Image 1 (cartoon, rainbow, N blue to C red):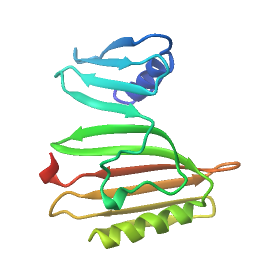
Image 2: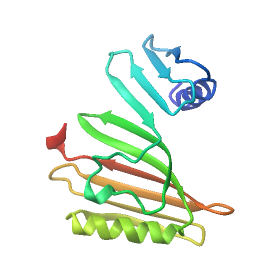
Image 3: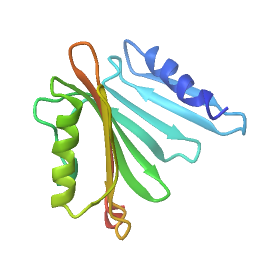
Image 4: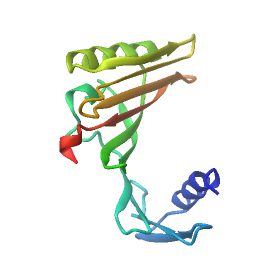
Length: 166
């Protein structure tokens, strides 16, 4: 069921329209996931059965993003998902840009280094790039994944905030 849940969530969110909409999904283990969306899907909140928000989406760059996860110049944000996992707060920001994938890696690598994050991984090929850095002492982390499309680059920036900001 775990593999199917993201698909179910995507389908449920894709069906939202008009006025605010609430969808309840029952998992095989009996727990529920509630998805509350406004009509144009620009804001959605996902609540797991323990009644705490698991994720929310908003198509604006988070104003309180740390320096290592600053908005990429000219980025067109498509989704922002706020997460809480194992007591660590983070976000996933998806966006489009006309910049090349390698330019995104260079941008976030420089910010990571300036913020004291150590490189974990860096991968690249002709069409895509990935960079990941973190600090195990305070939990800060960042991963940028970018892939060239026909006329733009699609990117996903995932970052974790310091444990002190829980």
